[in-house]
Length: 150
Image (tube, rainbow, N blue to C red; front, side, top):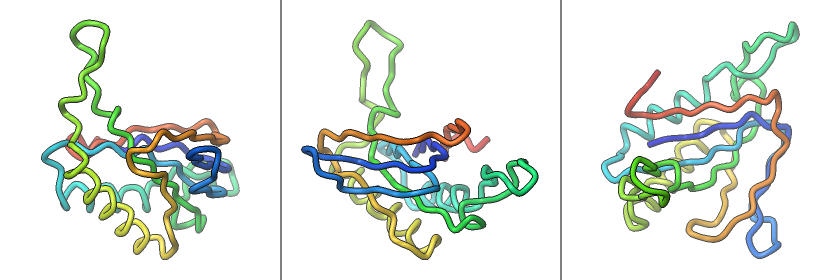
């Protein structure tokens, strides 16, 4: 399971010109799910996301977590995080989980993150054509991979 996170001042997702999810200060999470991901991957990512100290303290040092700042999270399913571009000019999506596997795992990820943050985690619309907009803060952008926890 992979999450591309962006520290944001604000972010939102639109589907057919209608805002379906929006947050203020916090994290925009683009979530990719691989075929054999499971609850262990979700547990690791949720703990990491809630506790990762990437928000600035009073001295400008990244020393505060999403929980510390009482921040928000916006989660968007993003199968393209598992693109393989090794051969040819057209990416392969074969590592991404099919919708019947990825949707329940994405929903479980959002539910667990909601519990850990103690507030709702808005999302995009699974499988829809979405427009994601954000004001990146920093900018701070990181890739977390539950199979390569570095």
